[in-house]
Structure formats: structure tokens, C-alpha cells
Length: 100
Image 1 (spheres, rainbow, N blue to C red):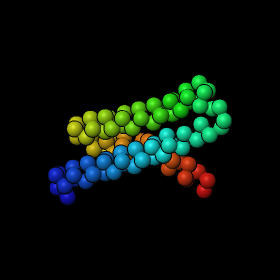
Image 2: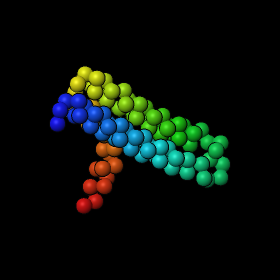
Image 3: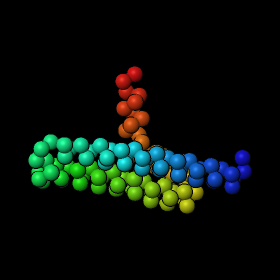
Image 4: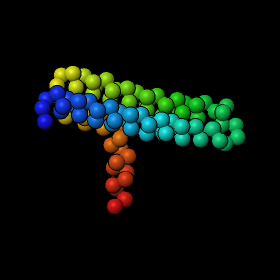
């Protein structure tokens, strides 16, 4: 495989991993809305703070990984770029493997 084809494959893999990470984090934020199911929970500052924290953490994690992966890719460190792109998915992979 020549260098150009390898670069395209790595860029595609980075994009797929980041899209999957974004999808997983979006599900986490969407499911955290369930905290507001209890009566009166919409007036609770603790619930709003927890929801805001979860949403900000998920957003910051995906954005951080996106920026660092692009920086690594531009410097030619392709393996590091793929690893950074996969970081948000790591906890879910571990949780799938652990019960075995």
C-alpha cells in the first residue's frame, strides 16, 4: 500500500471512530435527560448541575479528541491519531469485555 492510500485509510478510520464516539456520547446525554422524570426534579439545582456536567463532559471529551487527533494526523503520527480518536469509546469496549 502506498503512502497516499495509507493516509486516506487512516483519515477514514479517524472519521469513523470520531463519528461513533459522537454517537455514543449523544446517547449518554440523551439518556441523562431521564433525571428529570421525577416530579419536581426540574426545579432542583443538583439535577440541573449534574445534567450540565454530563453534557459538558461528553462534549469536551469528543472535541478534545477531535482536536488532538487532527493535530497528530497533520504531524504524520497516524497511529497516535487513531488511538486518540478511539479514546471516547474505550470505556464502553471495556464494559463489554469485563463481564466475560
